[in-house]
Amino acid sequence: MNVTLYSDGSARGNPGPGGFGTILEYIDSKGELHTREYSGGFKDTTNNRMELMGVITGLEALNKPCRVEVITDSKYVSDAFNKHWIEGWIRKDWRRGKTDEVKNIDLWTRLLAAMNPHQVTFTWVKGHAGHPQNERCDKLATTAADSLDK
Image (cartoon, rainbow, N blue to C red; front, side, top):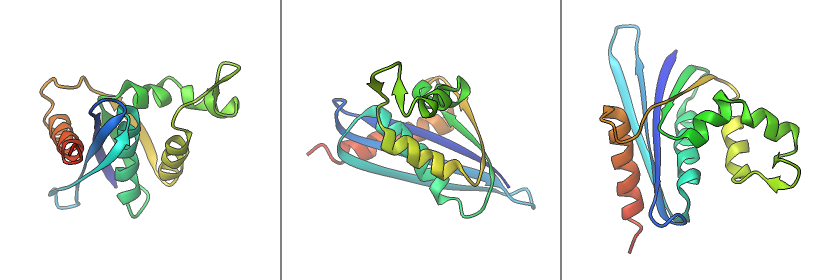
């Protein structure tokens, strides 16, 4: 099955209240489009953590191996795979350079585990540029973040 996973993350204050929004889409054998939306918020987080959580949530929602195209406006997420940063981080025991530890190791390892049964590719899109699903994910993410800002 081919699935398109759209994702976005948001944080107010960075760190501060944050949220993610995710949309899963697939077309069944009859040509019918199926869509599911997910969102969630956290009281004290960062934008990068929410970008990762959006992708993780979408992948963890899949109940069988799929070909997944992740579409994100996060260079942090897309470049980690498309520019092979993740491979270097793992090879260097989650270090950047000789001493700097990679941030968000807990979520990177969770993302790798969620990717494991799937064939996953990453596509970057410019944020806030009118892409309908990216705009919807942004709305889901900011709504989740703002609901915690009390």
